[in-house]
Length: 362
Image (tube, rainbow, N blue to C red; front, side, top):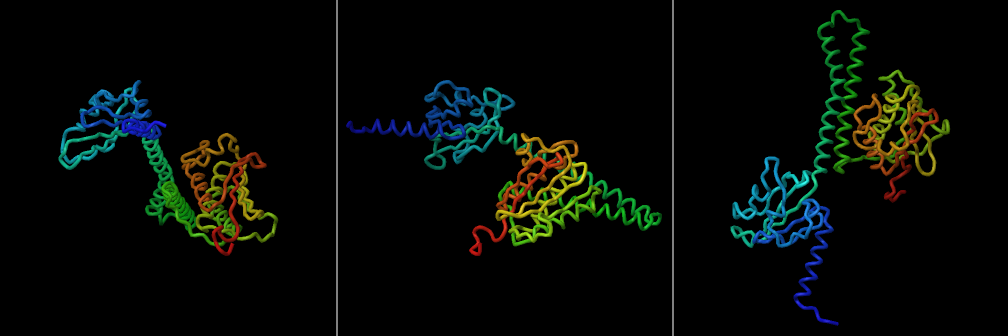
C-alpha cells in the first residue's frame, strides 16, 4: 500500500472541505488575502450563475452582486480595506445576476487587530424566507387592523350614544347597548389572547398549566358563553347520554379556548345548528363540533390549520384554527377535519384522559 504524502493528505483534506461546503444549505465563497477565490460551494456557484469552480479568480469578478443603485458588493464593502479592526460585514440585501434577492454576510479573518485581512468568508442566503416573513407580518398587521376595527367601532358608537342621549334612552335600550359593548369587549379580549398565543406557539414559549378537568362541564361553559352573542342554535350532547366520562389532563383555560374557537367557527360558517358531541373511549375524550355549512374540501383540510388560512367571505382572522392546532398538539392531543353528517364540516379533537404519560401515577 503506498504511503500518504503531505501532498496527498492536503488534497484529501481539500476534497473533504469542498464536500462539506457543498452540503451546506447556504452558499459559501472564500477568498484569500490576495483577493483570489480559494473555494466556492455548489450552492454559491448556482446562485451566482458560475459555470466553473471559480478557484483562482478575482473575488470582484466571481461575486457578481449589485445593489439597486448599481454598486457591486466588493466596491460598497471594501473587504480588504477600511478599519483594521473590522472582523465582519453584517447581512445585507443584494441582487444576484439573475435578479433574485440574496442576503449576504461576510467574516474577515486577521492574524491580529490592525493586521491585513488574510481570508474573506462570504455566506449567501436566499431572500425568499425573509420575503415570506415580511408578507406574514404585513398579513398580520392587516388582519389585526381589520379584526379590531369592527368591535372598536361598535364600542365607540354605543358609548357615544350613551353619553349624548342618556336621558332619552329607556332602561331596556341602555341595557342592550351595554350588553353589546360587553360582547365586543370580550371579542377584543379573545382576539388579543389569540394573537399572543400565535406568538407563543411560533416561538415555542407557550406555557400550559394542566390539571384533571371535566371536559363536558367546560364544553357546556364555552357553549353557554357563545349562545349569549348569537341567535344560532348550539346543542351540546354527551355520548352516551348521561354517561360520566373520565377526566382529561388539560389546561382548563386553553381547553375552553379551543372549544370556543371551534364553536365560533361553526357559527360563522354554518347556516343551521352547531352540534357539539363529547364522547369517551380508548383512553381519550373526543370533542366533536359539527356545523351545517358547506364543509371543507378534503384537499384543503390540512391547510386549514396554517396561519392566515381563510375560506369564504365569512372567514375571520385566519388564526383561529392555527391556534386550535397549536394548543391541541401542545397537550399531546390530535385534531382532524372530516365531513359532518349534515354535509358541513366536522372537527374532532382528542384529549388524553387521566394523568400525563410521564406522571408516576399514570
